[in-house]
Length: 373
Image (cartoon, rainbow, N blue to C red; front, side, top):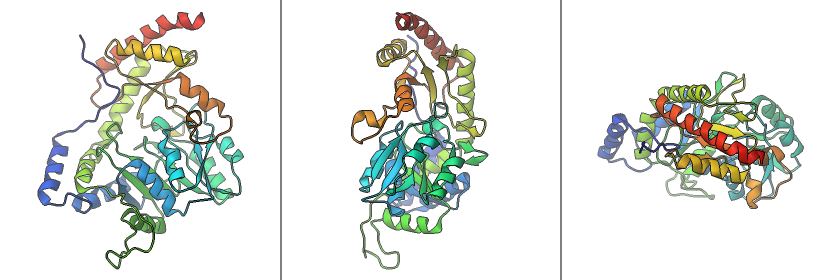
């Protein structure tokens, strides 16, 4: 039997081992140490921003950003309906209300028109998501935020290194938030990063991240804070990963090109769209099949699994799950049913992609007759 092909896996080299061992031997294994500073500065430089604040994961990073911006009870934050649940949950953690809006059918990012239609006197922020590694269309969202005096927070959890009009994501709004979970482009196991050019936001986030301890008086706390710190051991892993990010991204671009070469696409079978103004990070290869429904997609994924190939469905819409009220978001609803993520990771070879593509093509041929019936 041929080797299984997972949908994702991290790449960890001797460098990661050396840096983590160095952190362990230093004795600085918790939330202080040289690797924390090194990772924060290196990631800020990489994103082209002034400040980067390391956090325990991407979700806490989103919550920290919202809290540092003063968003809480009585406010609303606009988020796309098609995204991982953490985007909306982080808003709810503050006591604010996530307002779910529709997406653009090509980029899968927040629809500017939908966001505009969702603004009320209670709206405090807009939180676009760079879904599956492709940037949302940020210029019109920035214009909208300025027009209504709203904060703009990038959920860049899946888009390390992606660019919008030549600028890396993470510095396109008031702040950006990244995840370093094990399946992300670079990983610290768990972990995240908040990026910003705003000195006051940087100051507030750093205080709140560490139980809101007074910077000039140890163990003195005058407001509610959080333990959202990253460990030095995780940061050591992150430094090693960051030093290889260009190679990681180039391989993902290669993988996307191989899929385009070997998958039989058509008007109804598509792979990742890339806008002319964007460079995708290709966190996940996206396959959309217009004639899929939930049942056919499950059968297709089972077809791949029987051949040792893992895959994953697009996210459910948040509104579908019923935790948060929403209006009608038809594009998000349709996309959530027809989308599949195919294997995407650094050690995937062209031969692996060819094998996946052959199974994809075969599976679509087998199921197309069922769709026609």
